[in-house]
Image 1: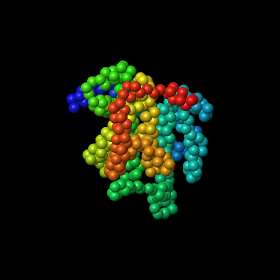
Image 2: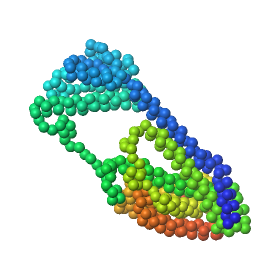
Image 3: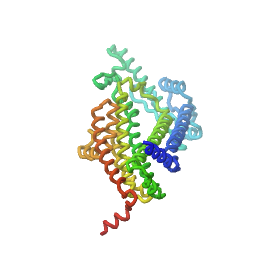
Image 4: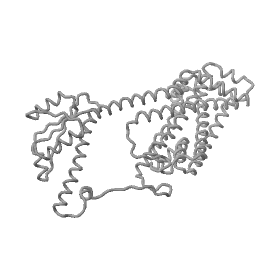
Length: 435
C-alpha cells in the first residue's frame, strides 16, 4: 500500500511538473474562460448602454390628429430628434448628419388612411455607419415601440367600433380570438409551466454533465498517455521496472495519479466554463423565475453517488486504454497522436447526446452509438438527472464490463516486457500495407 501511495505521489508530481499539462489542462481553463466571459460581458453591456441611450429621428410629411397622436407617443417614450425639411431627400441628408441610428418617416396620407379604416404605412430608415450590433438593436427598438403603439391603438379602435355598433364581446377577444395556455406533466405531476421553459431549464442544468464526463475522459487519456510516453522518452521506465514493486502496483499508481490530475483539470474547466456562461449571457433576460425544485428535477444524493460510480469506471477504463495504447509510442508526440484517435469515439456521443436522446436517432445510428462504451456514460448522467436509476445502473453494468476488459489487456501488457520493447509508428503501418 505504501508503494502504491508513493507511486501515485510520484505520478502526480511528474505530471504537474510538465508546463504543458499544468498550464494547458489546469490553469488555462480557469483563466481563459473568465477572461473570455468578462470580455463578452463588457461588450454586451456597452451595446445595451448604447441602445438605451440611443435617439432616433422623426420626419413627417403628413398632419392630422392621428399623426399627432403617434408623434406624441414617440416623443413621450424616447429621445427623438425632429427633422425639419421640405422633402424626403433633404430629411435623409439631415438624418445622416445626426447621431441617430434610425429615422421614422410618416408619409403623406397616413392620417387619412387610418381615419378611413385602411392601413397606414410608416417607414423606418436605418443609418448603418459601422454595421455594429448597437445600430441594429436601435432599429429594433424603434420597431418594437411602434408595434406596441399599433397593438393598443388597434384595441382602442375595435372597442370604439363595438361601442358604436352595440356589439357584444371585448376588443381583445376580436383582436386575438384564440389564446394558448400551456401545462406539462412530469413524473406524474401536472405543472402549470410551459414545456419549453422546463426544457430550457433542463438543458441549462444537465448540459454540464455530458461536458464534464467528456472533458474528464479526454483529460484522463491525455494524462495517462503523456505519463507513459515521458517515462519511455526519458528512459526512466526501465529504472521503474527494476524496483522491487509489482507491475500491478505500477499500473495502479499511474492510473490513480492520472485520475487525480484529470479530476483537477475537469473541476478547473467546469469552474471556468460556468463563469464564462454566467458572464457571457448575463444580458439575456430570464424567461421566468423558476428553479430545479419547482419542477421536481435534479440529482438526488443517490443519483450523485451513481454518477460518481459512472465517472469512476469511465475514467478507469479510459486511463487503462490510454496506458495500453501509449506503450506503443516512442515519445510524447506519438502518444498524443494515438490519443487523438481515442478521443474521437468519446466526443461523438457526447456532442450528439448533449442535444438529443438516443431514442430520437435513426435505429442504425443508435446501434452504432451503443457499441461505443462511452455512450453509456453520457446516457447515465442524463438519466440520473431525470431520476431514471434503472438506466443508470444498466449503463454502469455495460461500462464496467468494458472497464474489466480494458484493465485485463493493460494488466497483460504491464506484466510482460512489451511495455518497454513495444514500438509502433504510422510509417510501419504504411510499409505493411504496401507489402
